[in-house]
Length: 363
Image 1: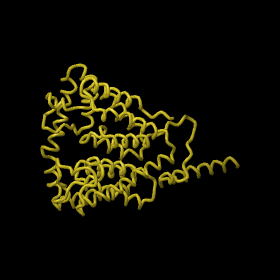
Image 2: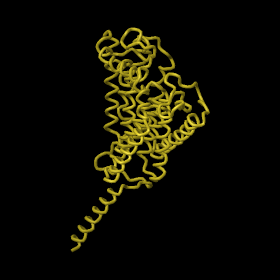
Image 3: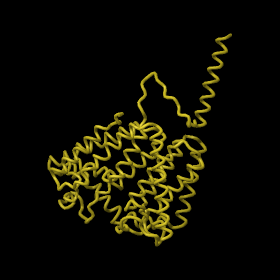
Image 4: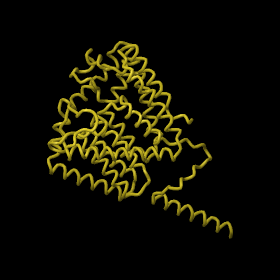
């Protein structure tokens, strides 16, 4: 099987956190299996053929459409949750007055929004029918809003905006600016930002996340040397009860990068940074909007501590990573490849140049 890019820092991080969990905390066997599931999935996705990767993307998109349909039922038809229990911590949906926050079959609004963001990133990268792509992107954006997560909605908007700008055409950039301006005017005219800000920046949300960020220096340099270097493992409750985090009774860090440091220490944090930066450099340009969006979600959600979400993240990274091509070799374009019109113009120029050169040679 093909070795995935930057897999050893990932393996090292999970091994380190597993050992720290066994040594420093009461290890939860359920959490110890995260690395044992995500790493094989990452390896398999990197080794998959183009057709197999395309099939994975289709399955993720189908799941995201189904989850959005469930979200519509939860918010507009008042069907209630389909699996698990309703989200009680901040149940009010700031985008729809009197409505609950949709969570689909994932038992948490942020988990649902994260899956939809992955599907949105895949759609931004797909070279498919433009009308179908826009419809599906609209469906996923609606689903994100139905989860009631302002941070996820902001990330979704940034993914789409980056996608337009990434196309580097005057029409695309102009369209993106006009859509963003119109959406902003409509939202402010309806008074929506006040409701969103009121919920997103209260003590339960922004306050808790800011407390996590503020704990970064203490986690790095305030713990005893073994835990500062190697981390405290998956169970972070003792970090709250010991005063490293402000103890508000909610033992979830809600920041992936602070979680890297808390769980894996300085060494684990360095491994995670090498892994993420390396994948960002290796990512194909078409997948960068989605990948950057997922990294942005790390500021409000520790998704690598979830089995399904960590696996999906690594599968996305595997599909997004560019393959290393030996020098002097060319990769044949797949049969379904549709070049951008700039590429078509360049091809016309190159063909015309070659034709002219051949004529001169004949003369």
